[in-house]
Image (cartoon, rainbow, N blue to C red):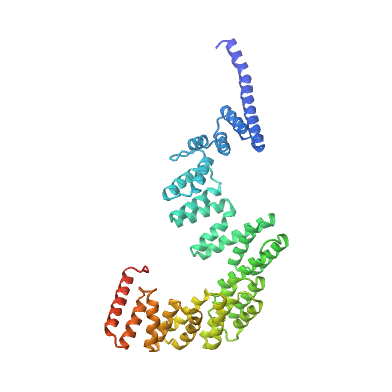
Length: 458
């Protein structure tokens, strides 16, 4: 190479550098102009600036940003074409584009197993490119749940949590749902650490605070729950924190009632729940379902106190009626039952079921059941389900003609009930109608045989 050529080559290096630097600077200017235009609402100008930038600097990141901007401005076909080229379905492309495609697939309302598998493929490609992105693993876990791959889902949630602690709550819920107590405890502890920081940084984040309470309940940290909720009341008085506190005490109760704690401790939790939120139907229902005898009468006293407030009167009357009835106090039991279904007709079916249990119990008291159902029928005389219950009880007491009247009335609505046909067969037999008795016996047998082959109710 001669001297003139060498000189030209040396002179061209800074010139080329200046051109490249100028183009790089110009591309950055176009990006800045695009951002300004987009923020000003001029999407068309923003797209023009982005297109010029991409022509000068066709990098994957810039092409991906152009595709997003095209979508924002309504140019969906062009946007999709760029995304598809950046994230092909059969090989690794640009990580954020694979993640974007997976998100879009998972948002589809017509999603099925094939679309879930398609999303999984894109997420696997995205994970390879975005190694520290916890969202990728979280979305993978969601897809694996959808396909029934529980082990893979939990493993993906572990990966997501290691990369981003905000996913420890989801990992806790996964372990909780799979009954892995020790793992759930660990995840709950890590989630509590995350939420402690989260609510300190953003005290009015209600979702974070409520989830913080949830994991603290799991960890049996009652004093911490009260503290966290008290802070919520101070910084966010519009939040329903008393209801949250009541729900927390109900949750503590549910966790403790199977662990052998004393009845006094259980009732104290429910009292605190009702003190925090007197409108808590959940607390009243749990009070009804304590499932233990209370010789002190404390439960009855609590229920009677609720009645004086005017809250939950129907369900409280029903609970008191059930307790009196089951303890042999028929007079008070029927009184409260009657008040319950006069206040709420829906509870009449619950009272009917209670009367029906006297047929099912080995030493059931048919007279007690009859007293209860008679009272219900005084208000609902044409209800065929209630008439069937009374007919069954009368048959148990050997009052065949009275039983037959109710059972035949009920048959119109329940022609496929084998127990009803069995009762009718018994009544007809004792009334000397053997032909009809035989027919109902045969129907009962046929219905029972069908039920054994196909347990689905007819």
